Image (cartoon, rainbow, N blue to C red; front, side, top):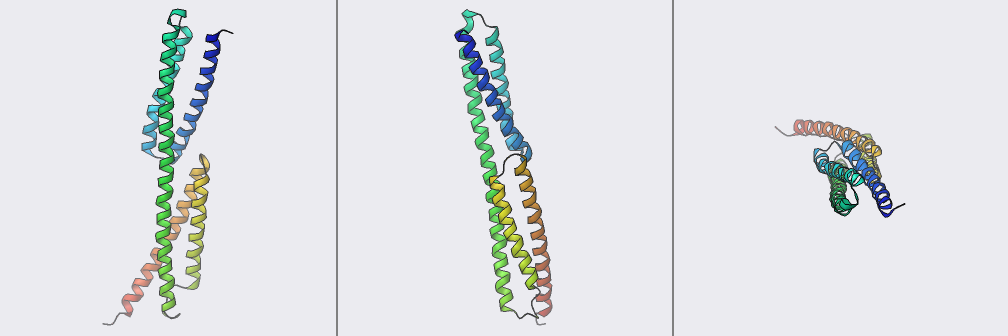
Length: 195
């Protein structure tokens, strides 16, 4: 095997690995339904195509053009890897941002529940619309949301999309229940106000 053959095999193997990494990031971005991530990947796809074109040209190059063509392959590979690193970082940032937003929502609702518990303790059992069962349900829902959010931080690929869907379904149920409780509390407070 010549030095050129060995170089070609090495570069082609590395390119297959980089393309597989790109496909993984692309699949995760598709699952996230995030247009920004997909835009970042468009550039990576173009750089990947550039590397493949340069490799094809290198295969056809004669000895005289070999070094010039090899430099072209190396430049294209560097650009592709740099862009791929940026796309991977961008995807990780999007995942972290999504998780932080969900944590903030969860903390906000948890604080609201704490206020309800305090209000319940102040009120007598007959005056309170927040029954112990409703509070227990909300507390269990918050705990489940926290566990689902934790699962979300460890999930990748399709498992991430499933974990995200489970979290959002749980979140919608919690928000609907809290809206009903607030509406019932506001009605009762309004009817108990002195005229």
